[in-house]
Length: 409
Image 1 (cartoon, rainbow, N blue to C red):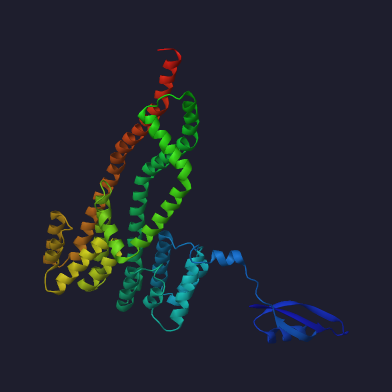
Image 2 (tube, rainbow, N blue to C red):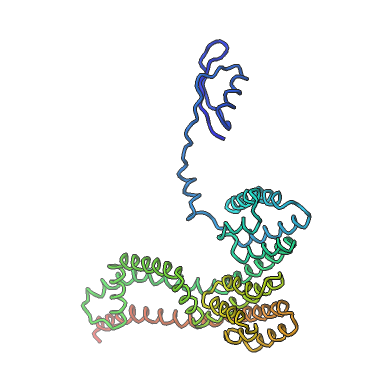
């Protein structure tokens, strides 16, 4: 609908003007004639550009679709498709009812594409930031097998597990992050406000300062003098690093490095392997070939290093090797997991036993998360103790020396 400014004459010849909203000028003219006004001019008003609205709709500031919203979408689509509601009607209804503006626009676009003749998987593939390759592949399998409602159900369960894993990781790392943040804030306050005050006092006495005090004063002087340059350098370094890890080589090296980080590296590996086992099982249960499932899962584990190992498993299977042999060559799985895979391959129930493998990894993740805080706390205590010791020695040692000098000792 557009805004139109009009001018006309009423039945007495008086000038009448105003604005009306309509689809085109013809509708405006008919409406004016119905009111007894003879239009003399009708022109469309230029749409006023809302700067804040344009900024809000910019991709950089748009809110992403959350896992909770995807779970609700899949649950609702499962219920609607099982009830026999047409796909287009179901999607348009969810687009109108969702509170997420981003998801509403995506669903509206998906509905328009469906009306244009494409299938649901193709329509969703046009929005990779909302529906990843694994999501689209499951929908495609559901469409081809006539079990679209089961595809949505499996996707909902899979995303729920992903959400729970992320929540547990956040809960385990919340306390260490708060402690580290508090330490950094305390160090900045001490270096910018406390140490300069003490440095001016010590300078008046001209006494020879101990080494810890010299270190503190030198650090404070550097931060107060070159602090802005240091911040600019850190921002540029962070920007360069983020650009680098978006490249294939950078992402591969960073993902490999993350697995070698003490304490948290094994946790990253367990999360990736659990995601691989559960997604691989879901794809096999849906009827996808092993090689196709491995290709999709290698991109869904969210780790380029492990993804490459999974892709090499696919290459081995294409050469004629068995799943167990290629899995053993990758050296990613424990002997217990290899035994379960071997039994699954012999009995033809790989997908069912992969769920057991995923549950095994989930238990290991729970145990590792419980130990994470216990492992980090001693390190934080030692670090905090060292910082307090340096600050105490740097501040109080010269005060004791000055006090002794003042008493003539």
